[in-house]
Length: 142
Image 1 (cartoon, helix red, strand yellow):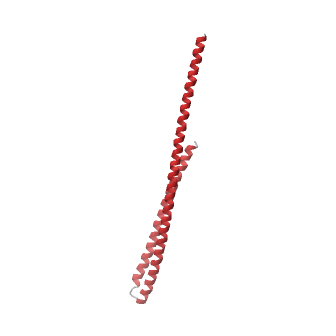
Image 2 (cartoon, one colour; image 1 turned 180 degrees about the vertical axis):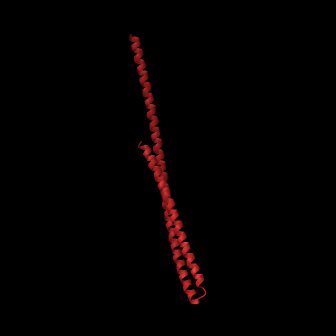
């Protein structure tokens, strides 16, 4: 009958509207998720940039400190050489001068070791941050 046909048509229209509404909701949900992920990536990129800046500043500071230590080591070596010459002339101060040379050398070796450890630690931090960006970026392309 005509009434049954109209009722069936209305039911199909309602079903179609419900499906469209559900699809719109899903699309909105997906784009909200994508926007949140983009925002997170931007945040991490900002953090990586800040960390990179911090690492560069620390590298510069470490480099300056190493230069200072090198200059101090050279000065200590010169002092030790002078002391050695004086000790040889005076004979009794030779042992003291050798001790100063040894101590200066040890201080220089320790300074180099500390600088190397700090560089290694900073480079590891950069690697970690870089891996985090790669991970988040690969989520975006999925």
